[in-house]
Length: 396
Image 1 (cartoon, rainbow, N blue to C red):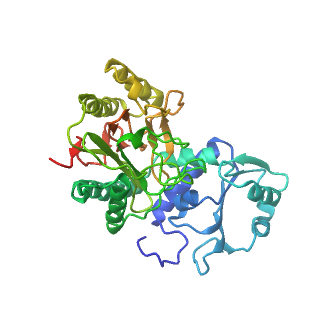
Image 2: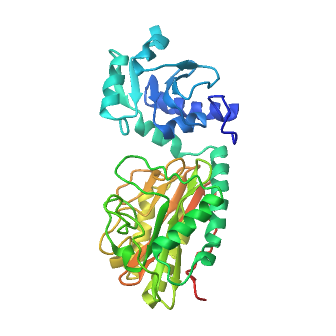
Image 3: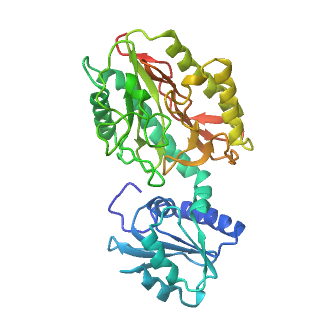
């Protein structure tokens, strides 16, 4: 799996591939879906352990067919090289399904318009919700990969205090963290579902910049360095009495962890320290609840109760602009299921991997609060991002 030159189209161990295929087919059967056609990179990677240009055709019964455009020279059962999607028909032949699911949430209109006629007479369904449901419950191998990313992610965060130099801006510190992350093996990619959110390797927000509203649905915004990417560090100097919130990419092997920690220079207002402790308290309370069968919205409601009782509501999940969630699934993409939000219909399941991020923005001081990634087991919750949770002061 670590050899990028491997020619086999399926890079997962055989048992892992069969497990993932069976998970997909179980959901297909539950939704009476006869076939799927996958082309989104995240879903292709989920099934095969690699990314290729083309399509994975998965019938409810029978062998999958991998229609490959690039790269050439891949090997393995079920490979058919094609130049255009219209060539898919010849390989399916008489086994054409009466319904087929395409990734309509992410498929461009032009591509959907070409693919639909490939299956004449078939009912077209949306595969995106089905695949999000499948990927929400991680396999044991995926959990191990997430633990590996979490361990490397943690090692990077523990070294952040040594990167700070007097006179740095949030952008300077972010570049230093990104450099260290890449040296530790971070792939750099921050894979996000959909095209309405964009980010490079993460967010580093100093002082007032944490209160700058962003067009993206992130817990924390920031003005960014340019209007073409209006999120994150904007060159704000790190000055005494302000915080620096670090929320940097944890993608070291295709499965990513999510972690936020807070650093500071000089003494902070007691309000900031109190809000940071409230975030930690919310994590502890939600971990006690975050077991299989718990409605995701119940976690949101508990957090809201804690924040209200602490009289911190005006600063919760933003100050000038508030985010509408406090947690989300993570894995191949940073925004997977379940979503911890007030109207979420998701139910916590064993095998979910969830990032909780109750955060606060204190005007003129900056952002506080932590984010951890947790694996949900049948009888406990496992934290896999283990950097210190208290505010770390650069000058102490």
